[in-house]
Length: 339
Image (cartoon, one colour):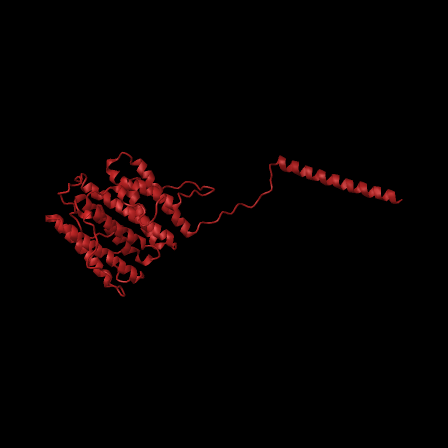
């Protein structure tokens, strides 16, 4: 009796298993025949934050310069601008990490940029300087500031080269080499940076401001020494630039708590001013060193970006006006290392 009941239960379980298997098979066939499938939740891609969008926009501006450079290849009117922008745009794009291509990629949208190289560089300049003022990321602010400085210098240099398309060759040792234009310059841009080259108030340490006063005083002494070895208009130009550096030094010392550590004399080897080539190189090195120093101070001093950029631009433009300047002499990312 017990054996018979166990056999009946076993047969019943077997029948249930077979029935379930047949149902699953039928469901699979039905689903397959109707091309149905079980739906899964769509992949949720994270939304980019504001800083990421700012970085992406900056990279797109640099990429557009490269595209404009390719389109302007062989255009003589763009050659002076291209001489700086060709290496600069590549270095800038590398520093930004390249152009980001989202996955999945959205439908392509029309480029907001124009096709000319000049217009692309102008928009990169203004976009970089605008981002530097508004971004919440200190590192991106510094990067965009120096990129804006580079683009501003490139545009200014190209315009100056167009005004003087055939610069005179480097003079011999008996000739004079100082620039004929020595006025102070502020960085040209549609972004308002003000017109100050020395702040009326600043968070920068008085110690650093004192160091800037000394650097300008050294430049004053250098130009005075150069003027002593020059005559005529070249001597007047050297003395005019000397006066600019002297006034800048005094202005820094007039700020609160800045200590005067200037010396009466500074050591400048006579070989550095021995002939025309040496004098031009010495003056340009001094101006470019000041430009680099101002750019170094951009980090962590967002409220001071305006006058720092103006002062850096003034120094770099003054150095570039000295005979012997070549576009590759300008650092494409002032104060930052470029690999």
